[in-house]
Image (cartoon, rainbow, N blue to C red; front, side):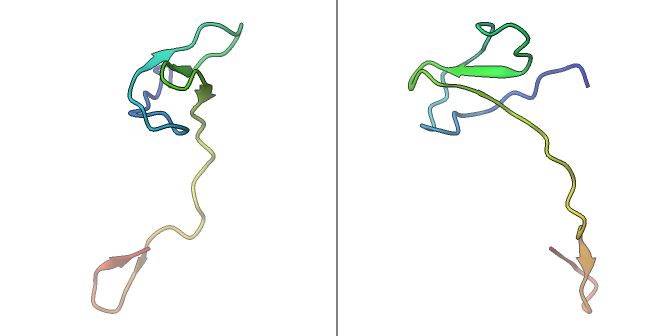
Length: 62
């Protein structure tokens, strides 16, 4: 996947004024919040092993 995952808001203050961060060398995928002056990076951790299960009524449960 070559595209950046774009966050909708800052995970620290909740503000929406975000910009891609280019300040740190090799910080691909880093974002800067103009409101709280923090930099952060989104990271995919993996899939949960439990997944979705079918209940007895035929619907899905988590």
